[in-house]
Length: 598
Image 1 (cartoon, rainbow, N blue to C red):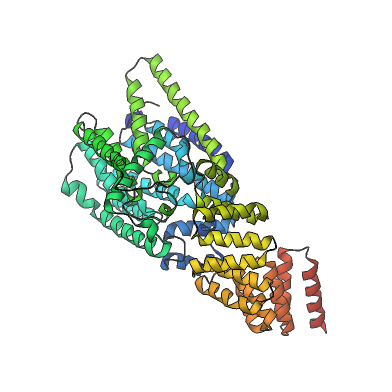
Image 2: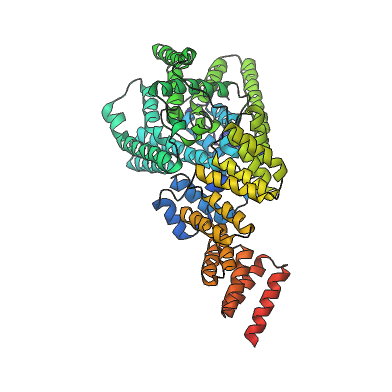
């Protein structure tokens, strides 16, 4: 794995390397192949109301229809849902394939640039445990997919730069636009390309190097500004948790940069949600982080003629990280200022430096020493693969991940709450109750924890207490659709359907695509005797979730009561196709058929 310059390219060797890397990547991530849905995966996988062709149009035309406005990402999820449904294995395998593809593109780019150790850098990137969060977490397909487009655009640009072919230029611009539609951290690509031009020639020419990239800069700036607006106004990255002075943002940026570098150099104690730092401009030692970062960059600048690659790698690392360093507000900053997935692309700068340094160290040595160096590099990559395998085991399911997070970060109120939700989902309400209480102790004004606490109380047969906690959740967040639905359900279960109906209606006003809320409202309307309105909501529930046996069965009953026997029979038959063993549905179908015969 020494100097992988263009002159040494060999199709057979390349194929063998990539085949071995593919096997290594899939083996290292084997524990995550069948991993379940985590944190906000359910919000990223295509909702029932977006699974149609009209839904695909909404993904592109309606900001807010999806959790983040990354339309190409959600279009990819739309296609994958048609292939895999809600089964997570297919999504995991796609993400693994994209990660491998990104590593291959990185190898090809670095070799084209004649960077020593190009294939070693690609192997380290593919198997470094800091990337487990991006690869084993379905939501972070935005990282792997955008990286493929980003690196593909860079490769096309290098082709254009060498031959000045219009076709290569347009291909690069198209791939860059696709990357921006997947994740806007890729907006840093044109700056990275200028850095490559400088590294190759030692200078920049305005007409030759800068002018062709102007459309890239315009596209990147527009996408970045739009994402900042979306994060603030649609995702919720605003309020007291995001108020910091510019000095504090600079302090945060300096500390975060060193944190990410440290995790690349020594990938120990990787955590899904890291402890959230207290950043204050009144604490003197916090100024050491940005001061040290500036000093390091200044030193590399002074040594740029002797070590241009070191400066380029450091600038690529910091520049690609820049959108996530704290100068712009991101919703995850509510939980932590750093996350492993933020440095997915940026890590290539440091990992390439490390690989190039290893290759340079042994390239002029005696054959025996070169073989020893190759063995050491291979051993290092193998260690990274083992660490990746161990880390990916934590992503097998929600409970495993949150318990591991809490062992390292016991003050993570989000993990306590999400663990309680996972326990409630599998019926362990008694175990979930203290988890939700712990989340509230750490963060009293936390509507999601109030909601989970109420769910646990209701499951434990304490409806009056549950209703009070639902009401508290809605006081904290009146636009909390799930709490409105859950409060309605609790009121209906307590024999008060009239009080439940306004909450169901409010939940649908806030989120009209929830099939379960349409079903719950229909049941409350049936209790009130409003069968026509109930049938309309059951029809909508079936439209949004065609696999709902309960909705189809109850809709069939209402249709039969209204004399629409053919339509009722169709609903019963479709329900039986989903659940052939249901005696109740067979009985209802038999009654409807006998009535039609008479």
